[in-house]
Amino acid sequence: MPVRLLTGTFFKLDGFALQDFEALPIGTVQVPVPAYGLADLFTGASLNGGCALEYAILLPRQE
Amino acid sequence: MAEIFNKTVGPASPEKVAILDIREGVVQPFQAPNWLDLRVGMYLSLTDPSNDDLITGLTDAVAGNPLTNVMSKDRYWIGIKDRSKALPGNPGTRFIGFSNTFALGNISGLTRGDSVLTSSNKGIAAGTDYWWPNNSRQQNYSFVVTDGQGARGFLQDGLQQHFPQNTTTAGGYAVLLGLRLQRSQAHDRRVTIEVFTDGAHSADMAYTNDPSKANLNTALEVWTTQVVTFGPIEMGGLPDALHCYWPFRKSRLRIHAWGFLKAK
Image (cartoon, rainbow over all chains, first blue to last red; front, side):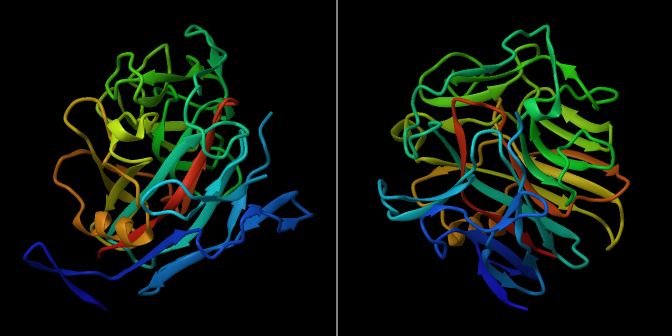
């Protein structure tokens, strides 16, 4: 469990799960799940302390 | 279909950005075991329907009549929800976050007012520096807590969101939106919610040209005391997924980074 120094006080952090998209290839997200017509958006997440981001689900376009 | 765009304009370039297709939503479930203090943040921006990096000319209206009523799919939703594939407002869903839905009584089916994307001065008036999603029947609808078909909380002013149209004036191309959830013990379904307010109309926490994971982490660690507080609110269950849905057809929502910090 990390302890960080923030603005003069000790701040105890349990965990985090943050995502940017730097690990992903440029272009259309192409991981379809045919049974649902959806797609997974891979998580390039940074994880810590038992926290996690699961696979994202793209919802079908709403007409 | 969503895409990953390599944004090459800006001090942090190149930066990869997820762009949701028009009227396409995303649900990303998360695990934060036994959290007591959970802080959620998102760096977001808008772009043109076909140009991946054009932030002008996005004015739009869904229905375009303040006296009309529209469905959940015609509202915007930015926040956290249950991990189902249904949009907030539907039976069994739970949502905490930003929306222009009418939030009194039963919110299933049609809700009052339209959805418009207005050029704004970052307040509630006209301007050319920001894009402001709102409901022209009641322009201040901007934050809501829903539990199934019912509203558990909402605010009429102070938590509106403004996406950069002029990045120089805004101070960056991405806006930071966030919220903090606290509860007294793990598995408690009563939650207190904090959302930053600028003291006037806006929930925009910051603007940046470097919307990185590292900066998001720092912003969530520091948090803020300048907040609107809701609750404690008891819900049937608490949201466990990040969620964005953008209803407009003349713009797309870009996600630069998002996630959460379990501070306790």
